[in-house]
Amino acid sequence: MSSNPTEVIPLLQLTDEYLLPDLQRVCEDQITEYMDGATATRILTDKDLVLPTKSAKEIKEAAKAVFLEEYERLRDIDT
Image (cartoon, rainbow, N blue to C red; front, side, top):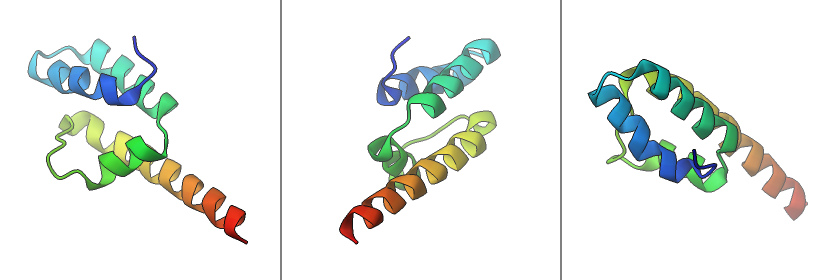
């Protein structure tokens, strides 16, 4: 499986459609483990990105955490 969350998101979307809960969990883990600031921003702002209902809350919470960490890191660099 790819360590690039952007490549895993389409697979995650298919797991919900084809009722593959085990693969869905693996995709969720990959996305949250390897998420970076750019991916977090996309997850939080892309209105066309549809995540499975069972995965959306966990992934969005992880995206918020990554986004805030990235923001604090950038803020510290500026000061």
